[in-house]
Image 1 (tube, rainbow, N blue to C red):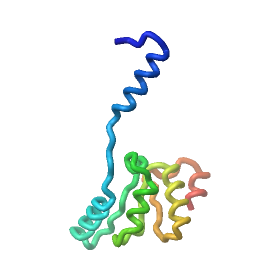
Image 2 (cartoon, rainbow, N blue to C red):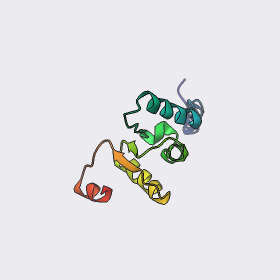
Image 3 (tube, rainbow, N blue to C red):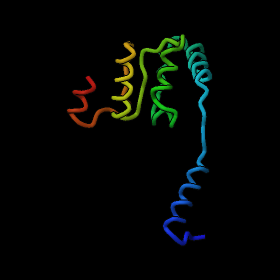
Length: 116
């Protein structure tokens, strides 16, 4: 059924947004999975990838859980320059030695200078 007025259209959009899926992340399960990966590959370095805003869960809450866990982590990876900046600011504020890996690489010389 086609909305008859602008008000109906806005109401239809609002209703559709309420129908969106919701996902909750169990941070303790995430840490458990990281530990399992390390146990099964003891001579490998496990690098958590926190891309796409941790799939909507938030880069910072997920990074905080990882860095607060007993799992030793020296590197966190993200997909975009903006995520790298956000995560690097958090890591700096947390006074952590964890490095941030930008999977997509830099696009400009200015970005490279900021990331170094």
